[in-house]
Length: 247
Ligand SMILES: Nc1ncnc2c1ncn2[C@@H]1O[C@H](COP(=O)(O)OP(=O)(O)O)[C@@H](O)[C@H]1O
Ligand SMILES: [Mg+2]
Picture 1 (tube, rainbow, N blue to C red):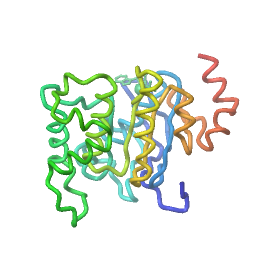
Picture 2 (cartoon, protein in one colour):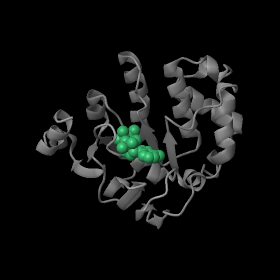
Picture 3 (tube, rainbow, N blue to C red):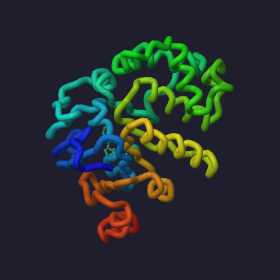
Picture 4 (cartoon, helix red, strand yellow):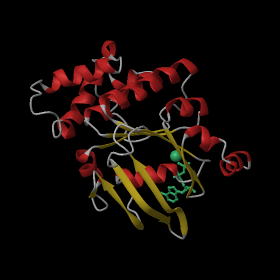
């Protein structure tokens, strides 16, 4: 990562409350262009809430979110997708009754064309097929989504996120419930985003995957950031060890 670059995303002093409960307490988060940032923390520590605040799914109660130096705090989710933020996994789910390629085309029609290069004259079908190929789903392009296996569904999710032509991919528990070999396969695809210049924010419980993935690692505990830095340093930080062992 090149920290001399301007941040892609800069969230400052994020506060999120659910009724009287403070889920996020003044959390700062920076992501640089092309960077792979891991986000870990015990269950209920606010990881999904934080990425929902960045994707716009949740309105914040304090702080600000900037994308490429512009304030996007008031932008709705769909406008943030257009601006380059793609949240994948957990939601939104693919349309089960559509084929794989139809699912991709929906997203390309919605968002993908907006920031694609002017000299990209491919049809939407050609773009869809090239994305499907890049995640290794070519043999399932015309399959109904409801017939896909778990790992194929993750590939479809990833392909849908790619179809929005994002600068930031948010992967919230993309590896949950997969077998060892499947974890490797999906992790490989997510790590490959870097070569396309895409930043990835990954929330993950499988520590071997987190350590392989992360160029920087951030830790949330009970809605507060307790560590942020070199992954090896972070996991040997006494406060982080205590948070995990003290559960
Ligand atoms: N929509 C919501 N309404 C009320 N409480 C919520 C809501 N979403 C999350 N929470 C609470 O906020 C805390 C953080 O949740 P979450 O961000 O999902 O944690 P994590 O993803 O780290 O497991 C939890 O205590 C959870 O119960
Ligand atoms: Mg979560």
